[in-house]
Structure formats: C-alpha cells, structure tokens
Length: 193
Image (cartoon, rainbow, N blue to C red; front, side, top):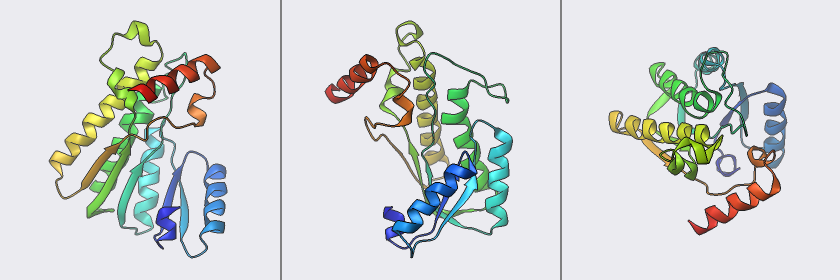
C-alpha cells in the first residue's frame, strides 16, 4: 500500500496467478494511480524461480527495491521439494537467494537498490537442539541461514542497501494449523523476549 500510495510501480511475485490477480485487483482499487503487475513465483521450485526472473528480464524492468517476504512454516513435517531440498530451507532461504542473485546477474536490479528480507525472530532458536523444537527447528534453521546469507550479500555487494527485518509476531495463515495453546504460547514468548 505504501509504495503504491507514493506512485511507485509494484510487481508482485505470487505462488498462484489467481492469488496474485486477486491481490493486484484489491491494490489497484485502493490505489488507481499506482501500477501493479503480477509475476508467478513458486519458491518451492527452482525452475519456477528462474522462469520468474526470465519473465521480469523480458519485461525490461529495472527494480529499485526487492522485498523477499514469502515464507513457509509447515507444522509437524519437514517435506522435501521436487528439487530434493527440505521445504522450509528452499522456500525461506535458497529460493530467495536464487531469485535475488539471478536478478542481479541479469542486471534487472538497480545498482543502488534496496533489498529487504523479512526474517523471523525464530532464527534465534536455530542453535537449540532439535529435540525440544521439533518441527520449529527446520523453520528456525531456514530463517537463520537466510539471515546469514543476506548479511553476506550485503558485505559482497556494498552498493545494495540490504536489510533483514523481523516484523515480530504477526497473525498469518502460517500459524493457523497450530493448536490454540501453541499459538497462545508463541505470542506470549514473543511479547516477553
């Protein structure tokens, strides 16, 4: 909303075209002077990440800001993607890096662009033993690995304004499958840390 209210163009990378078009229509209704477009982007597939980058490059776009906000947290499981990686790691870390590095390689990102990675305070749990964390461990490790990788990218490409931010506790679809007690405990832990 903020970018569109400032008259900036926004390209939404969305897992499904239907969800992307729905969001585009919603944003366009609120900001008729802003320009919003959709690019299919399923981070659970490296091929689809590459196809998205190719689509952006073909459009002749020059991106001044890239916001990596997608993520996945699958309770009670650590499934593998078709690429053979653990799902949390590929979606929350590896595919974001592939996207950004491929965009940089294609010259689609402006030299002084801002790159935002939406992290999670859960990255602090990655050093804990796997046992007490259970399925949280894969999520925490993926966020820790991505945080480290984006900080390394900032050091290697100093012209980019790279930031890793954590929004704190946010009610999203990620937490809906968790039992009510687990959600309440999670909120309590985040508010006291």
